[in-house]
Length: 203
Image (tube, rainbow, N blue to C red):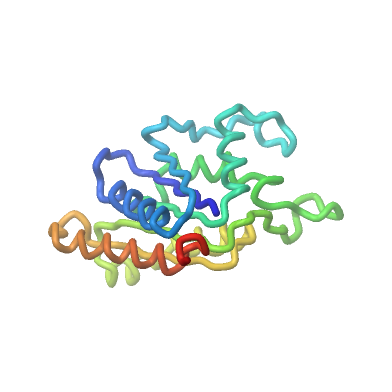
């Protein structure tokens, strides 16, 4: 089984990178194949060109590769900081270019895109790990939780992923080394709970 990890954070060696590495290792320990994309390190181009809007357009190789991988993934893990209640722009661009019609969702032939879509993703479970520098109580009181709505309702429900799990770690900027170790233990536990050992690993 294959799990796709998508990381969107610019700072090398960040806590987000540690989350990605921990999740990837937890998956491998449970017998999964892992595809991990560090969008900034790879120089992913988030700009959606107008000619790419067409459903059946010939995609450039890197975008086609991402589309093929997300189509084949049995599970998805997204990792990014909370910036203005949104993912970083590079990750939004990944959504625009990769979770496209005909890949992640489709409309019935009887409508022109105004109806309810059918999700096409094979993945049954998606996990989103976020980091933040605002205390959770203030975040909820002042801003609500736009990332929950974005990832759960606007993206994964839309694309047919049945189970959605999200965990935000805060306040990262003042966290101790011990706190971060505890958080990474939680990342490992969450990942392995929702992607349990494959039969080959369990026997």
